[in-house]
Image (cartoon, rainbow, N blue to C red; front, side):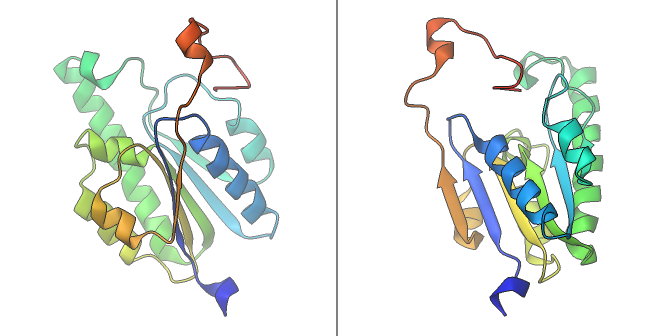
Length: 176
């Protein structure tokens, strides 16, 4: 019975590893033969995990590339970012409800919520209305209390030490 129940995972915090953990769960679920959707919100440049996931048969969908931080966007750029995030969220919501997926990963969706692009209540409704056999993993920072209460797993990645503090920028294959 437990194998059939889809649970909710939150990978949160200021530290490195949230996306990496979600990718690992996608690989593990795909290894069971079940379908997986990896929906990536608010990412900029291409990231090294995308092509290997696709080769494993994971359905990868991303928002249009984000070229700068939201706080630096002009009105037109922000509007386009919102449109792209909303469209991806709607596709992910349908996947959650369809019963066709063993896992739906919403990478950085919590940041889209934090920026007001996706409403927390609408995210909660999408999770509550998902197929009972679909596992959901969400990544990002600062989830709301209601989301934490709904979650079955919460892993908090904290930045204790990071090379960025020494001026080392993001590196291919490690941070992206």
